[in-house]
Amino acid sequence: MKTDTALSVAIIGGGFCGSMTLVQLARKAKTKIHVSLFYKSAPLIRGTAFSTYSDNHLLNVAAKNMSAFPDRSLHFVEWLHAKEEYSNLTQEEVGKLFVPRNQYGEYLEAIWKQTLDELPPHVSCSFINAEIISIVSKEGRYELTAIDGHSYSVDKIVLASGNQLPRPPLPDKNPFLNTQMYFPNPWSEDCVKQLKKNESVLIIGTGLTMIDVVIGLLENNFEGKIISVSPKGFHILPHRPIEPYTDILDEIKPPYELVKLFRIFRKHIHLVKSANRSGETVVDALRPKTQELWQALNIQDKKKFMTHVRHLWGVARHRLPSSVFEMMQALIESGRLEILAGRIHEINQAEDFASVIIQNRKDSARTTYKVQRIINCTGPESDPKRFNSSLYSQMLKDVMICCDEMQLGVRAKSDGRIIDLAGNINENMFALGSLLRGTLWETTAVPELRTQAENTAVKILS
Picture 1: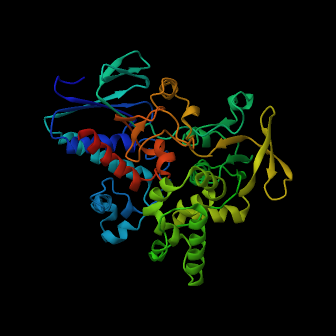
Picture 2: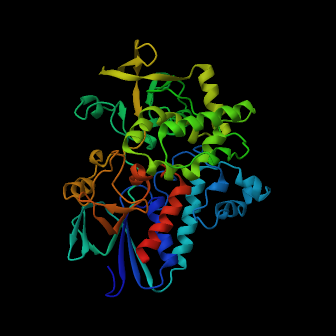
Picture 3: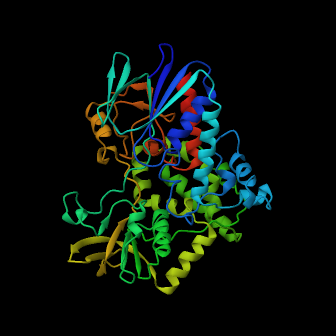
């Protein structure tokens, strides 16, 4: 797997984080290195996020903010502008576009191809379509075992396993979870196909994944009612042209306490709204400081944030392209899409439908809905103890990793170095992406992930 003098690195996960870490390693390495990238199912490089089944699934971030490289902010814009379909626009106009996610996948593939074509002689790579089920520390190195029994020995490991399936809405042993009416994977095209044309569908969750599923349903000529439920029932906001706002940053100073931060935040929301400006501009102003603020909060404040602020923050942070927002509004106004604030109280299975009792958040009234399908869009599972993964179960059992204090990911330093149960920092094992949610909070969008990929490569090579 490596020559005697080559540093050997295993990357587990072939989506954005894993592939861009390899790209950064290939471009920065000055001495012999062999990188093995292990991927299980999602298309290599694109991952789940950028290999969607619909060209109408758009990026929720403007092109100008989607470069794969931290030090080349317009790299994606320049790549788009070189394509014939965008050549009649200026680069500034291209930068404002929300393009299909599949097109971003093409961009990542172009980077990948160029990287492999230009590999220096001291860098070699292997791409292995296999699930790693165990990692054992052995004589100063790591032995990885794949589900097919093959083993691999490496010096350093990058955990870039990406998003897990959402947590089931019922206890694990509930028989409904094994029926053909329940769809646990909202990113699979199967969840929007082979439906009865006019019978209702229930989506659990009201976030961006729900929007993708609604688009998929419409593309498959579904004409029935779509019911979407979440505890708060918030509606997603659109991206709107906004002027940058930085006044709030003058008041955001340590020591950071949630009550104080929230008071300042509300004050500035009021100020911008009084000036007929969008409140989202205040949220955008805080983005560069979000990770710093989260890391400085004590555990009590973090728990308060998760209970009282998280959903509001998510609505303000994760917004829709205006064209998609207008489509959703039209569906709501026509009655085809209904957004509910409440919780599922009970699900009863009949022969060809499910009877779902939803308890309304406002008055606790319970309403029964008859649906042909339930699709889980509650968001990726973040608690490693709940991952459907032999690897993470083994690593937790062997205390190679442990959960962070919020049960939102693995315990790690802000630069991704794993911290084990005894508090030891592992200089040879790194986590990226959603695994760092408990450490960084904001760690799912390309602007954060590209920086993590570069910094991880630098750490590995240092």
